[in-house]
Image (cartoon, rainbow, N blue to C red; front, side, top):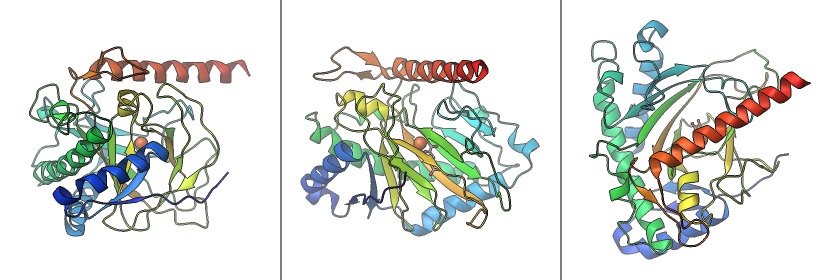
Length: 322
Ligand SMILES: O=C(O)CCC(=O)C(=O)O
Ligand SMILES: [Fe+2]
């Protein structure tokens, strides 16, 4: 079921002077919908376009080249194609992606020879995403009653156990093709992280959101999906499971998906970029009321992946019993 919703636009301009107002707006957006647009964030349209060109050039390489740095799940970095299976669908997303990290992934970057400029440009963009993310997380810390730098040291990209990641995504051109209904460009899911920054190219829409999730461990999801279509230069941000738990479920990590366009609609390629903020492995996540028990971010992610795995196995078992 489709439902029109308006998502808040958070203006980061004059950040230092307007921090109280920005915090109020961010808390409203994060406790209600968990999705919002961010504008005047300091990353120029030109810089975003340059990163999209870089991502486009990488994906245009032959698969044999991209496969030189395959997805390494333990380090959450590398390239994969038609490989990510969501428990909500049971089939692989119609996409390819490359995940880039800050630490311990030197061997998982494509070489300068294969992808000239890719590493330099991506790292530059990651720095910019990191800056914007820390501004938002600083406000959310204040809003949740922590010290304003509370989340900063916990998402420290200089630490060897840092888990901050940029994922470049390419949803293939499917012009003229029809897929069974369980095939999505990205099947419905929540993000495991604290905060995601999403960029897309103008007009390459398809992202849909379903607000209303009550607990960070919940799989249940309603059926009122709303499109969220950013203008050029706007960042779509969403709250992830990690900060939902940290905030005792006050901030909402909601389900989202990317629909597969039908024949008659624009079915050309779609490119997006997602910067996932995930606390350092050793960072302690501890709520103040509902979830007072301490857990490391490393353990939190492992548990989340295990829950996903079990849900997928249950889905397969149900399908084979039919
Ligand atoms: O491509 C998009 O717009 C969304 C991607 C996404 O939700 C994800 O990779 O977690
Ligand atoms: Fe996502």
